[in-house]
Length: 83
Image (tube, rainbow, N blue to C red; front, side, top):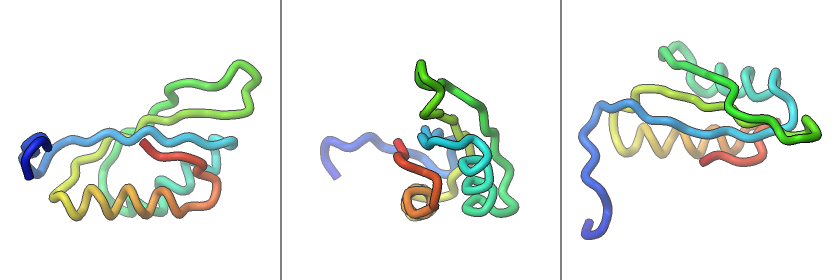
């Protein structure tokens, strides 16, 4: 498709995951990712500590795999937003 970057798979991909409870975010990631290796790091918390952002870095095998992870993360309870 014109205008979209060419992505060569497999490649490392990062998702930003936002929610209110870090433990719920970590559990959601573990459930969605399954046995695949990944790195999960806390990125930022709001000034009041109400919202937290985690960075998930994982190797995606294909365009479909990348989108499948994104959609599965969005549907998990505890996750408010995925970038």
